Length: 235
Image (tube, rainbow, N blue to C red; front, side, top):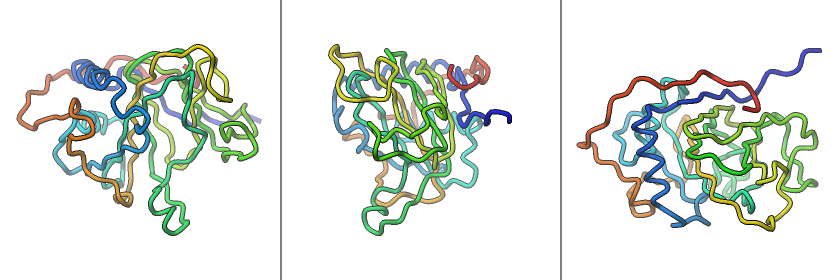
C-alpha cells in the first residue's frame, strides 16, 4: 500500500522579501509584550477589507498562494513561544467561544502558519489522527502519522483547518514539560480562513501590538519574486 500523501503543503519564500523583513522586524520589536497571551490575542480580517496591521497586509499578499476559497476572512494571531517550554498541546483549531457556549465544534476551512525565524526544534507537527488525552501534550497515538515542518524564515505551511497539530520541543520531541536550558523564542504568524467570523474575535485596533500597525497611506515596496519552490514533508 502506498504511503498517505502529506497533509501539509509547504512553500518557501512565500512573501515578497521587503514585506517579510518588515513584518519580522515588527514582530521582533514586540519583545516579550503579551508573550503569555499570544494564543489568546486573535484578530479578524475580512478579505474584502483594508489592512490595518502588517499581518493583514501579509494575508493579502499570500492570498494567491493560499486561496482561502469560500472564506469571508482570516482570523490571525502571533505564535510566540520558547521551544524549551512549549505551551500548546496538540489540538484542532475551532471557534472557541461557540464551543464554550454550545459544545459545537466548528473548524476553519484552512490553517496556515508563516514562520518568521529559525529556532532550536519547534517543528510544526500535523496529522489526520485525533488528539489523544492519554498522551503527553495530547499527542496522537501514532506518531508516525505526523507531517513535520521545520521553522525557517518566510516558510509557509498550509493544511486543512480541521487537522490536528502541535509543536515539538527544542529537542524535537513531543513536549513533556519545561526543558532545563531555555531556548530563544520561536516566531510565527498563524492565519485561519473562515466562512464567517468566529464568535467574539475583534478587528485589529493597535492597542495590543502597536508595532504591527499599518496605515493604508503607507508605501508598500513592490517585489513580485517570492523565491523557492514548494517543499515536501519534513523540510
